[in-house]
Length: 133
Image (cartoon, rainbow, N blue to C red):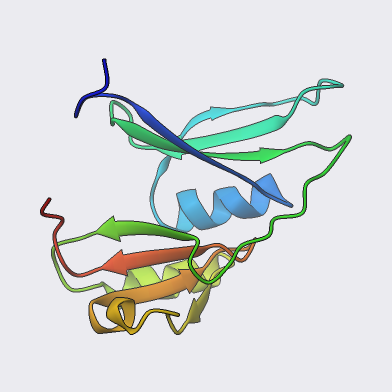
């Protein structure tokens, strides 16, 4: 049964899992939930980040035998609803760890947050609003 406790995994390819870890772990502050430590022929290298015990995690994959080039669009967003002003120190840390602050394609995100492109070009939005369904 699918309900509010169903675990969600969002997955996307990455050119460089070490760069992704710097951005999402060292920059954003997520935890490494799983990481492959050696390459196994025919299998993907994986980096899973999120919060221990959380109901979601973010998976970044890299297939060294058949790499997939990430193809983000301006609307491929990973949005975090902070419910508070965006900490400029966090944005600076994201930039130092490989991110680039960019204008949002949708002006809504500029009005209510900050958009940062990750090392693969996918966009992270730090939203000042709270989520209300």
